Length: 162
Image 1: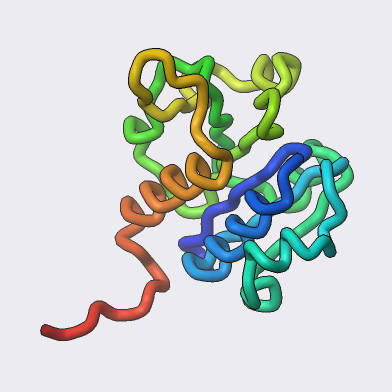
Image 2 (image 1 turned 30 degrees about the horizontal axis):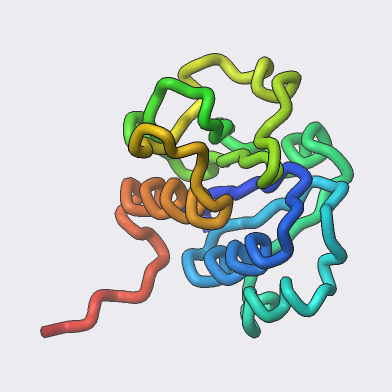
């Protein structure tokens, strides 16, 4: 599918977030990439419960490190999601095969990883003053659906007729 987008979780820590993103990936046709190490066992009940029965329907790939992941998938562009960015996720014009990189839930992407992205490839989600961050699965879902919307929901079921 040429409209595909990639969601990359860098060292995810919370199994329920990964499970939720497995379900999201299955329902929107995106690829989910998991960068090791994880803060949980991928076969944990919490992952399965959050992903329901979607694990077999989702396109999930495991990678030993970020460089290997990017070499294997060769995305068009990679955007890093971070609370440190000044550019909103809604500003870029996304394209098929773009990728979104999200860091561990408790600490975000390491500075060494963020430093490899120019500011135009670092995106944030707006929040009210005092907000620290959004849930990882929620943040990934917001950005992934914006990209899919811009791609005119390519590959989605036809709209029901009124």
